[in-house]
Length: 393
Image 1 (tube, rainbow, N blue to C red):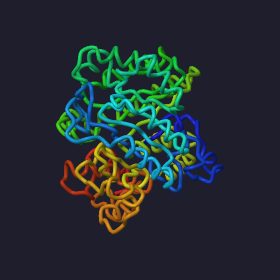
Image 2: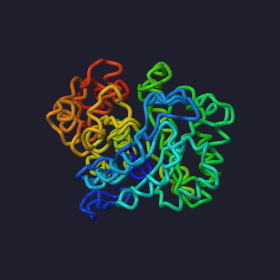
Image 3: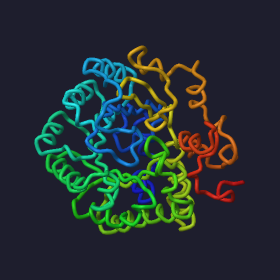
């Protein structure tokens, strides 16, 4: 997760996380990525059920459920363990998390245990009543997926009217007073809508947007041919930076992030160097604090049936099940060779990654994407668009 607005526009300085000791339990949400202890943010896919069947869904979510979801009581046990372990954030995802009637209850319980609760949703089920209930429990954030403007989004979601329903959900959440942001997964078929997404953000006064690079997982495995090539990726990252800067110059200080391709960090740093930006070296300090990809360290996943994964995309690498062992025990079990390797992946990655001068601020990028294309867990992520010269080879 690379905070374009935080880094490029100086919304965060390297001294800011230091004031809190870089402790995840003390840092405010906008500084959490710079924590030193890297207690895991946990994505809990509370169900595989969904009212849509999106083309790029990493979880293959649809209406039928292949296995029972964790019960409410099992969820409470999970939350107790995560809170005791020190996980700062519980992200409720799916499937579509709002198909679970007990979601507000679970979120409220997590908040009562000192965690931040956020949800990732398609937005179509957020009526004004649902928004009011989510606000009442103290939800920190609602991230609503919008992968283009009307026609493109409806095609992605494979349902006519999905865009208008999501937009209503965004407006209902905003009107209820919940911090609300957009989630946009980048492919070759929707890059033309990115300027329109920025226009929509401005029109609707939406304070946050995350642009996700495509990960080849779930149904997204079938979209590799629709991913951007390296030249296209650089162009889109520059577009996102430029539009963010333009809005900032007009006094619109929204939060803009790119997600799931950690070479965006070095790319941003090198751009700032070329531009003679005096903040470039301070940004490098923040990128080192961030540490790049945090799979198996600062991000984890619990599936609807209790299976624990290193992150929400790497679903062919189960680590255990919370019905049998607490998440905290699974997460710290270094007798598992994969978990041990992920805790020290800089000494395991191969090829260009092992020689890269930016390895400490990229962390080797996405292992799920590397394995999907190369067949090797420690191989190079094909989405890295930096040249050999740029990375010091």
